[in-house]
Length: 327
Image 1 (cartoon, helix red, strand yellow):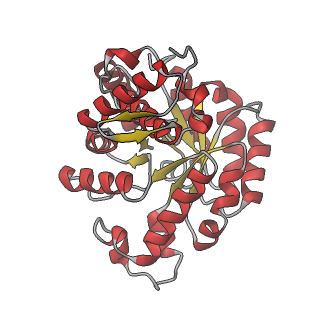
Image 2 (tube, one colour; image 1 turned 45 degrees about the horizontal axis):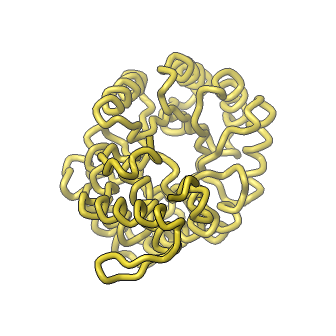
């Protein structure tokens, strides 16, 4: 049996689009930020894995004129989070007056505690480079950046942005994208139904996902504002995962987290199939094999390995034969 880890054997499987928890939960109000970190710990214990990141929000969370105070608050929360917590911060956009101060204070003091920094309203690689320069100046030269793609110009540059080595994930900003069209796209395109049917919105979502997959980055789907209908939300998340190629999704309410995790999780049947194929492939030193009348080789092994990674990220058990590669 091959002693090599599947990530090392299966070419670019290590640069997986499933490299991050499948849910990114945003909150910007002090009490909710505290509760989000507490919920992350509770669900981590329940699932045996961190199934969502907590992103503390400065862009929408900070009151106008209170940006410095809010930056100090999120810094304190990040520093006080449990050692195992996955906590990130969304700062203001690079052209906002508070951007430099946000980064200097938050990253300068708590950069070592952050899993990433989210930068909104990125339009081009030049914006990415400006953000990298600020983060590096604050002393966090290895901190990954996530960016929000929120305009037609940004979608046009998505492949170039995704190619930057410090970028780990691209997120789609639905509402800003729609409003950036000056009324040419109706408000209905922001709704649960409209965002999956309007051709311009769908084109943007597909372009962002394609850019991420082309460069081994994580595509993160936008929020769904109709948070009270958990069934509809879960269906939307499943559509984003299974039809549009997204491997992560935003949450803006605690009730959205579990439906998102369920939607991005593989089925038990898929897990069993993936485990059987990967186990046999490793025993054959990754030579081709037949399974239930179908031929498989490294191309399909990669897919099945990523299914097992996704199971692990969503807290699902995997068969004993392959468990040692994931835990």
